[in-house]
Image (cartoon, rainbow, N blue to C red; front, top):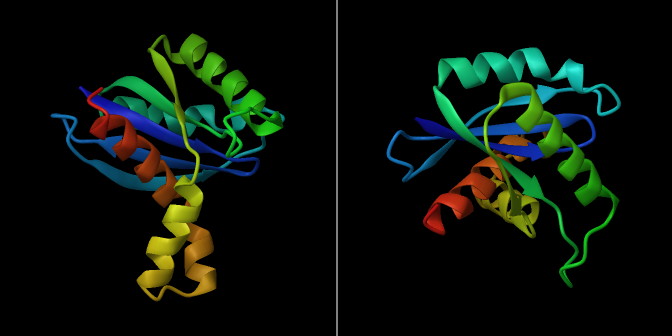
Length: 138
């Protein structure tokens, strides 16, 4: 059983999956979606959950640097609740502070062009969210 990691944005969802032993996270893809209609992401997420034998979902929770939560955090909480209900799997919210910036830094160090970075940044952020969760011993 593997764990699914998601970086939920307004227009895209970065997707990562753990290995079966929960040691490493791998980026899978970036799903385009309409935040105002959860159904736009559900069919592909359902396929991924089935293909990878997912037993738990980790959703990034964007917090401000001082630990407070803003509007994006509320959106992530709503999405996580919807996922838990839709797929009947446990969903964990995980602090994602700095993951997008860290992903950007990794991609810059790899000398990736701005255009290519834009295509993979959410997937990379999902990897960092999930890897952080796995490294914490969950």
